[in-house]
Every structure is written in C-alpha cells, then in structure tokens.
Length: 366
Ligand SMILES: Cc1cc2nc3c(=O)[nH]c(=O)nc-3n(C[C@H](O)[C@H](O)[C@H](O)COP(=O)(O)OP(=O)(O)OC[C@H]3O[C@@H](n4cnc5c(N)ncnc54)[C@H](O)[C@@H]3O)c2cc1C
Image 1 (cartoon, rainbow, N blue to C red):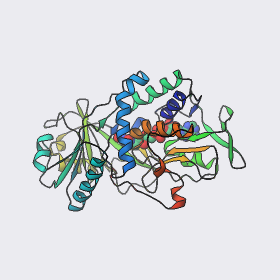
Image 2: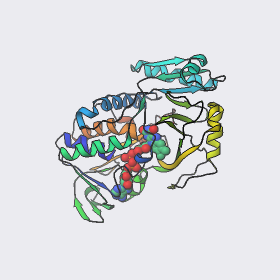
Image 3: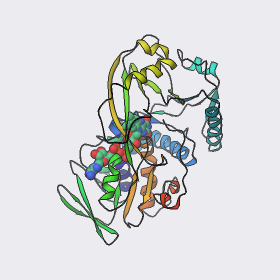
Image 4: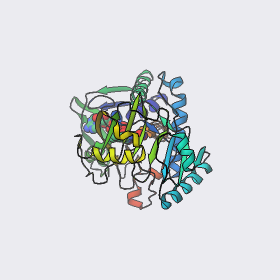
C-alpha cells in the first residue's frame, strides 16, 4: 500500500517519503496469496477489483515491471441454499457493474476442475479475469517507479512518534531522527493501530493470523484450475508452480500478532481440503508459513482523513484484500490527497463510519 501510494503521489508531482521499518514487502504483503478478484458483495469492492485488474494490465507500461498477472479465474462454490442465494445476489450486482461472471452448475464445475468433489455443489460463480499477481513484483515495481518519479523510499527506518500542534500533524519521529511534514498517511498494515496511537487516534485494526500451505506435485492434481474457494469452509487452492497453494481460516484463531505455525491446525486444512479435492489426501507439504490479516470490525478498509486530525490520512485495515486493493486505493487516495477526483469513490471506507454508524460490511470474505 505504501509503495502504491508513494508511486501515485509521485506521478502527481508530490515528493513523498515512504518510511519502512524493515524491508519492503516484509509485512503482510510478502506473506499473501497474491489473489486478485472482482467477485465481492459490495459495489465499492467490485469497482476496486475491476480497477485493480486494469492497473495490473497497464502495470508493465507504467512502472517497467511485469506484475505477473495471471487471469486464472476465481471459482466460488456454494453448497448450502443460503450461500447459493447470496451468490446469486452478488452475481446480479457484479453483472450490473459489468463484471463478466458466469454461473455454473455442479457438472460444469467438475469439467473445469477435474478431481474436485462436486456432488454437494448447488451453484458456483466464475470470473475468468480474476486471478493472481506477484506480491514481490508489484511491491518492487511500484517502489522503483516511485523513486524514478521523485519519491524517497527508505528501509530500516522505524516510525516511533507523530508530532501534533494541537490537532494538526507537524512531523514524525523515527529511530534516525525527526521529519517535519504537514501530512502523514498511516499505512502500517497490521501495526496501524499502534502507529495511529502515536497521534492519539483510535485505529480499529487488529492482526489475525492466517496460514498458507504449499503442496508438492501429487497424483490427480488439477494442473489447470482457477483459484477455487469452498464458501462453506473458506478452504481455497490454486496451482502454484508445479504444485498447489492452499489455505483456510481458523474460526477459533484469536486476534494477535503471532507468526508461529499452528501445526495442530494444519491437519484440519488437509481434512477439509481432501473432502473437496480427494487426491490431496496423498499429497506432501512443501512448506507452510503464517501471516497477518489486518481486520476491521466490518471487514472493510479504513481509507481517508483521520477523525479530528487534519493532515493525517489512513490507508489500512484491508481485512485480507490489501494486496489487490493497493493499486486502485493508492491511485484514488493519491487523487484525494492532491484535491482531485478519485477514480473510485472511497467514501464507504471513510474512517468516520464508526462514528456515523453507516457500515456496509463485505460478506465474501475468505
Ligand atoms: C496468508 C495471507 C494471505 C493473503 N492473501 C491475499 C490475497 O490473496 N489477496 C489480497 O488482496 N490480499 C491478501 N492478503 C492480505 C494482504 O496481504 C494485506 O491486506 C496487504 O498485504 C496489506 O498491505 P499493507 O501495505 O497495508 O500492509 P503490509 O504489507 O503489512 O505493510 C505495512 C508495512 O508497515 C511497516 N511498519 C509497521 N509499523 C511501522 C513503523 N512504526 N514504522 C515504519 N514501518 C512500519 C511494516 O514493516 C510493513 O512492511 C493475505 C494476507 C495473508 C496473511
């Protein structure tokens, strides 16, 4: 998010300074699954998904880096009638917004993903232009292009404080000394609550651990398949190199900044996965890691001016969708910061919504 925003501000003639305490991509971005989709339940997320794909298609021309966008499609499986009804409602909204989504029955799903168990599938939705992109390529592509347009991108600098004059921001403090500035954007991923507290702002973002499992090639593996998601369990997989990448949320996972792998939980992922893709039962694990989602109470990001803190902006709380949202949110927030019209109206993400009580939660959450 920081790299995208730095790039889009620099393109507009600003000279932003991006401060990263570790290495670029060392936070949630470097641990994510790289998924990009338009199949959401809220209009704003659908529009951001559409714009994300447009920006990824233009990425090499604008930044000089191939973002490794692979339109393998996203396939969402509904196995309960309430899910199928919600899927139909979401598809209607997506089609209204010109997203090319198909609705498939169990037999078509079987053909699309050989080896998948589909007896219980009531309906499924497929959008062929959804897919994957490279977190490393997108992050470094934006950082390099931001620098070429005049941004400063500094690694190994820890922001330790935010200085205010009354309510207005006047600078930040770091482990390498102070920086004067009339404007600050808090885009610190799962650590945004702590950075917000430096300006006495309550930023409702909590870290939530998620695992990603990489599986060795196995007999019966679907060689070509979309990102496939079982909506009932949240189990998902997609081809990754010669193997498979998969994951599933743990409903019992407590909030907290924790990167340890829960070896006790992994058999549950394999069990649910093998129910959907039986050949998985014989597969071997190549590697596993844990990363943090940055959750807000309504699973929607916080993007816009911080309440009662002129000069402070928030771009955080992406609740598991921040990789795909970074290109379009960076583009539109940069426009707003520069006093221009954004490509996508970010109003529904306003941090003021927890004061006004006007919430529009996203329900297609993986
Ligand atoms: C397992 C997993 C799978 C995911 N899959 C997907 C997916 O398929 N698609 C998708 O769109 N999203 C996915 N996500 C979510 C996505 O990774 C995040 O929403 C996104 O990376 C957030 O980007 P960010 O730049 O806001 O945060 P981060 O990448 O965490 O960057 C924030 C940076 O701020 C730095 N920082 C924090 N505090 C300070 C400080 N005081 N001073 C200086 N620097 C500081 C951190 O070091 C960090 O590098 C996934 C997440 C996980 C964990």
